[in-house]
Image (cartoon, rainbow over all chains, first blue to last red; front, side, top):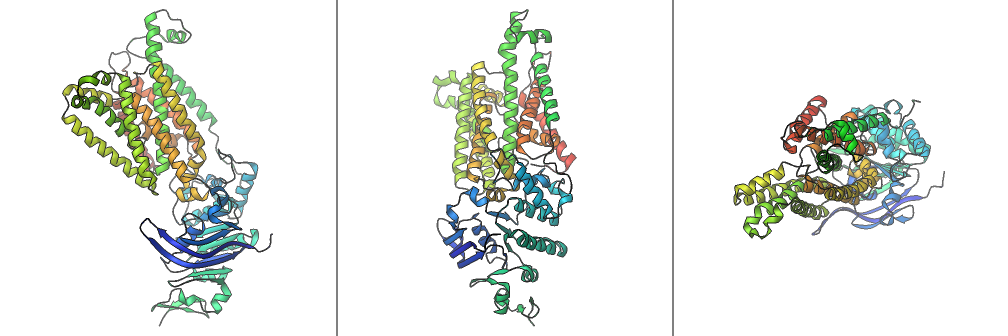
Length: 262
Length: 345
């Protein structure tokens, strides 16, 4: 495994939406220095801009200002194909209905590497089998995607991202619709990918307890600032309380969770 | 570890369908208002029939018509498939971009508008070539308008609505034109709307075929991005697909196919909508590598069958082809919906 170099950095990044007339800034002064092989949890309340940040980092949406550098190359200089070999995503949106089987869906993850017809080589098939084996979905392979439960589908989408064989995987609220069993299973699976393959995984989530237990690093977004740091550091510095700072909730450092303010 | 088979093989299905296509084609060529024995038809392909009139009918009428049916059927079905994949909408058909409305407008202006300009161009309106040119110009105009608006849009769904709006707009203009037209002109316009596969000379058919091949070439080039679109536009982009380029190629290929088809054969309904659904019933896949040839073959079969029925074999009548495709197309879509309760893209 290569040394722990900075894989993704952002300097003075401003994110938001731009139209001809005006810019709507969602967040600014974001600075990120992400090392390889980390599980990062992006925390913040609804509407704070977590998805916008993830979309900007994966170049789905243009940044407003600042700089994003991926493995030493500015994000805007990377071709779509080169980018697709370095970052894969799992989005919140549902995939459209189709006749796709689980295998076919995962195989689409190989598109950045296949020829113009999308023909799978032996190496592609190996990667697909590896992705299936590492997400515990062997028994689903021949099912149609629209017959899967939410929990199963989410594992399949992670397998697809894994088959894309990128250093970074970005997941936007991957556990949002899942029961507690599948929430923990997905987190464990991601943690395993970080430890086993040295993947760098960024997820946005509201599962704060799970995130605090498993994430190496936290990115916290609140109305005023963006803070990043190792999980222990941020807990010790009591930075989490600012996340949901309100008259209703507070962060309890001892139990590592948010509780009702009494 | 379970055994992994990447994809089912459809070779046998393809062979069966191709054979069926051949049979349909032969039946289509052998039936018509004049009865010609099958033996004579087969020998006419090699240039010898016992009657010169038979040979004339086969070479100059039935063969071009059957080839037109094949091109129209497969072209419309491929366009329908492209639109359903692009818009992820099972009700999208080849004409959602407003192309048939544009062609109708061109033809309406030619036939109905001539009374407003004067009689000097009247001769043009009665030639099939004049109609084809007017239809192409109208289709191109609307396609360009849709593409210019589409350039400003990130949202693909909006294109669907814009296509529909252009359709309403052209329908309104046609209504105004109709209001000021004579009964004679109206009848001619309505006849164009019936659709007609039998008007093409071999030269026109050759032009048709060249444009068809160009569009098919484009479609084959985007099979991979089409498959990635099955996951939605954002996932497709994350797989390194150039979304704008893919979208433009889909629009241009569909525009070429439906434009040339409408120009030469009129606005043929329902084939482009029903065939992709029917195909996905036979081929339980979403892979465009399989679906594109499959819809082409099934579309051609459907069009040949529709044309065979429209000729009302052994009678002197020919029913409007557009009526036949709708009479069979609409119940098929309803049946599919009831049977599956779910329609796939």
